[in-house]
Image (cartoon, rainbow, N blue to C red):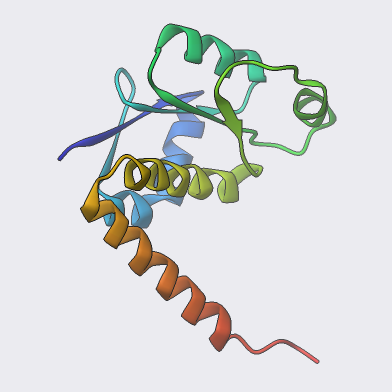
Length: 137
């Protein structure tokens, strides 16, 4: 089953997203698109873009990923009023990866059994990696 993720953002932001999340895209079977998708990631800019994406694509799951820690984007996150069902995740690369994990969880919640198993396996590996870490003294 094809799982399209629509990217809205500057070309360099979209390219960076694909580079940063290549492993997750492959693992969960997501394919990026500039024109269609049940899942929409708005990269950078202000949350109004996410609101417009929500209005323009009813039924899509929309996530806004701030790309910088600039005061302007921080204020947008803090002062943002309700914009509809659009989530805001972590800044930059962490937010990009969290967006895909969010989409995977949505697919699992919608009853896609294969996604349930893929997400469970991903979380198991992540837990093992964290437990194997040695903290500096």
